[in-house]
Length: 250
Image (cartoon, rainbow, N blue to C red; front, side, top):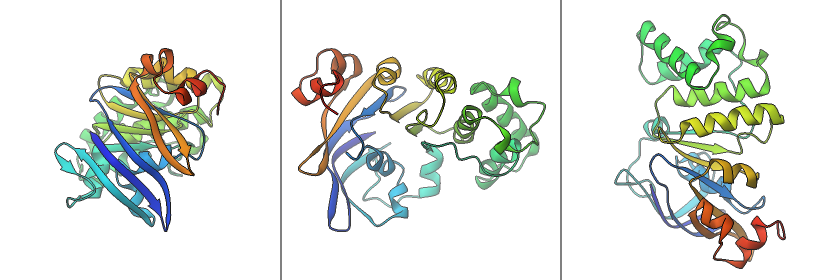
């Protein structure tokens, strides 16, 4: 995925400008920076969730040769290929099984045995199978916060996406649950392309191959620096980046 000169605005207010970066296949890309500098707005453009708002977009987002901002886009199909995990777990108020069956049925998978095999596989992938296999028909809302977030990740993965967008997936969790979800994210590396927004700089260093630092400049969010995560933290090119990752700013 390639992003060039992306601009995002709402009404007459520009919230993000001049964003250009490459998102590399099979890698984890972390987006860091203080609140309000456009990281979530950027993430939402990548699978066209901005269509549900009055956002105006300019620039270019190339995905598999298609410009997502100019070419006709099947948004349902796009969101199957580019899944999204939100800050707070948002399971449907249904059973664990139904949470995973619904997206499969929505995308035309009618065979019950095929659905069951996919559900079992994805629950094993996120480390939930041993915990819930004997209560798949229990309410998903009875799960702990960490289990709910892993179920939401499973719900995105059951559609076999190519890219997974994660908007602060650990911020609403306790430290133990956060650690479990972080370990899961690491296991996804190489199998999926992951873009994660996080305010936890230590987490970004632990999980990411690449990192982008966002900052507010003249009340507009901008990408200040992007590159290998190790280089961004250990040898940042921009003074703002150095100040932020050292804790002097932000």
